[in-house]
Length: 181
Image (cartoon, rainbow, N blue to C red):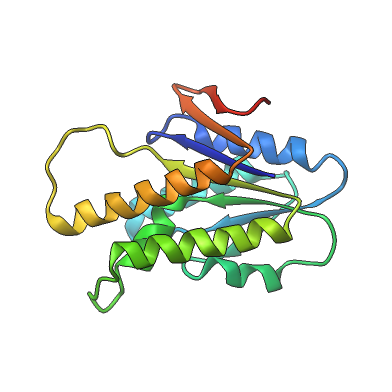
């Protein structure tokens, strides 16, 4: 089962996703946290530390996978697995904007990520994906940022179509958009 959880910054989507992972692994499945954030600067380190504290004592094995997300599968043990991918916005940015300044076309990035996450989902018991809602500010961005938003929007839409459940978290309140809890 795939669950897509979306919401704005600081809305509580990570805490909700971790709660769902705990519920989905009550049968003893291995819990994995698939971290996609490339850490830059003090703010990035603080954000990572906050998430580490949230996961403390929850028995999640962390796999750092900032690109090529399906390459995390061979790093997992055999048997029942539930995976929390945090987060899709970082993964899209990492795949799109290379360290050398090169930019991969948004359509290629979106197709690659959707294909890899579909592959992962078919190999897991449960995949919980956290994504960002960054589409409602009405600001006119430069072309590179617009392409990033196109890629993230396409990935969100494709995965929402595949997902058993889609949940939007608003002010800490999960709202079921698709499926039943």
